[in-house]
Length: 578
View (cartoon, rainbow, N blue to C red):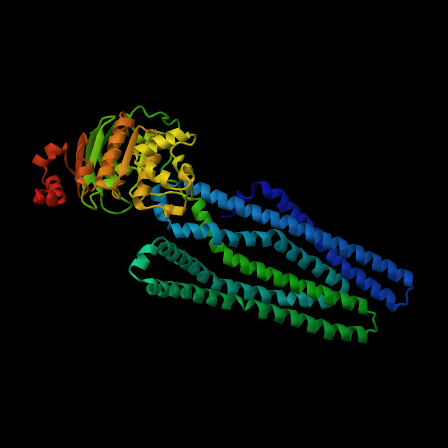
């Protein structure tokens, strides 16, 4: 885990090391100051002159200023290193997530990934900040103060050793009780974020069904559950403070009582007032160091689970990767399924024994009932998933032989759930072609029947689209997504029920535009309406993960009962009117 996290420090190694060096200097200065103060008290006790006091005072002021400068500089370097580490960590996680296949993403909830990129990284950042500063300062202070305490007080300093086992025993017991609670609470955090995400995305449905009170109650229970677990963990961690206070007070009482007795009984021969003062100071420094170590321990206890969740993302094995010397050129848009079967994870087969050939440039319609695996079929073409059995060929080659980027660059998909990103219409369209000119964008938007409504906006193509495209209608989103896909001019273009929110006339105009604009591109249209696929070269009828029939509209009306039934149910009203 530490090796994986260490890789994200990168350019901030220097500032991290400088923090450690400067903190060490600060500790040395702070440990020397009580020694000099003890010497000053001894001098005063023996009746020194004013010049001696001024000299000691000057030395103390210089050392205090140096200590202050070291502390401020260490704080600056520490902040730079920890924030930079967190930035690199988030970037590394985000970059890794971009390489995930759908199967990898299915393993993590999106809300969990958000929590890992935010809350978990923040926890690790705080721990790192403490490790390179406080975790260096406290042990050094502990060791130096302990050594100086023995030099100044001899056997009296043994009390410092007596409290250490008590403190560490308490810390170990606290961690053992608290760790399982933190592990559980972070999983609940994921569920809480998932509830928020789900509610915000489905706000229209919530309001349409007047379910605000139900959602508020559900969220309240989830938040209370997280609060209760955190409260239990914090109650356990709260024992850290009284244990520390017990140790601190025990040392102070012992040194004050036994030390004072020794000073008085030996008339300052075994230990004088200056040494007594230094012992108290070193005792306080030791206990403060132990207190800071306990705080570090608590913070690390909290962040270990976060670190493990981060590493889980970074070390996730990417299931789909390009092979070495992969093919970079897709010859054409021909597609072939050869004995293809597919299943998600450990579920039963979703597709079974699919055999299919599509010539480059053909228009293919796919129709079938809900759950017949239409979308699953087309996801295998661009290798969003790998087949469980059999082979999918594109351009005459196994899709597994292609470089993933090269393959997907030639397969445009307009998904069933159309996604637009926050930005202008032009910025969204240029996802299809980064250097597209205004004329090219206007042309494809006309083909997708989107230009008319875009021109009606006050800012036209510079209109800002809100996250998820919430400020345009469903039909407008679909047409913008179609235009974006057309702009790419791919070898294969797939429409996954992507015209369901437009009327039949607009649907027909879009299909006409595609035939004229990209005649050599293979076009695959998944649809619920037979009207959307009636003029296709071939229509594939899917039923429960199998191909029930293949043919054109006329052939299927005569040979396929499923297709005929769907067609007649959709056109019954028109037939009755006739």
